[in-house]
Length: 252
Ligand code: PEP
View 1 (cartoon, rainbow, N blue to C red):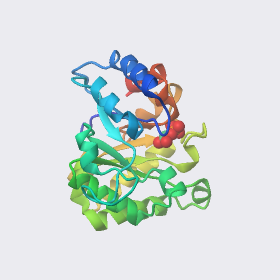
View 2 (cartoon, rainbow, N blue to C red):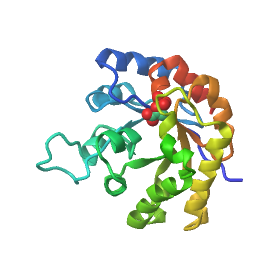
View 3 (cartoon, rainbow, N blue to C red):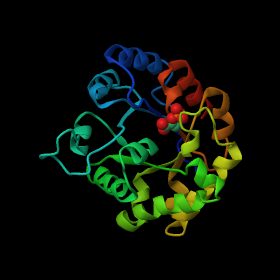
View 4 (cartoon, rainbow, N blue to C red):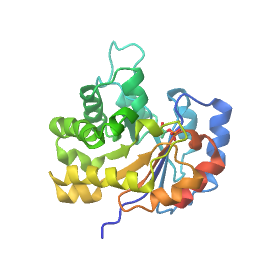
């Protein structure tokens, strides 16, 4: 049986302050051992990356960003932050294709796939978010939607790219709503995603971490994380509370 390292990632979204970042990180550090066999990852807003990087120096917790510019290196792209800059700040991961970016900022599968490619080119592991809306689920289109979202990346980056990437299944109807996919619903889609990668490369499919996101909390984490193809969580709201987030981490 393949053992995949559990990954618990906190997406702070547009929340926090200098003080809150320091407090949250210092509370989290006490709950993560240097030799922990799970990975904890924090994705604070850009302005707090520097503070977070300082606070996490020589700690086992990893740092990531919530977004990346589609353009390489540097240039006349007002308001954008490049992968090179994120690396410079100590980021190892970056979230691409979060449903809020798709819905609120018009990011298409093509934009997401470009961001995925640029992230890897700059040495960052993309966390590719995919998932269906409630309407799509009710119409029985979950697998078709997820297939399209992943296929675009396979077509552009190749399936080998998934040897250094993470996939997050995040049903849009479960994000920030308090509604969570049942463990069986999560497992069904996670296993479908793994089978999509497996159509291209069975070894990469068996190794790629597929994490679940959508109202994960301490009270539902254990059940979700016990499913065969659920390798961790992408946690929004609950990652802003150290006690909650640590309880989720410990459930992994
Ligand atoms: C998210 O934004 O990635 C997320 C999963 O949010 P929440 O946990 O708040 O549903």
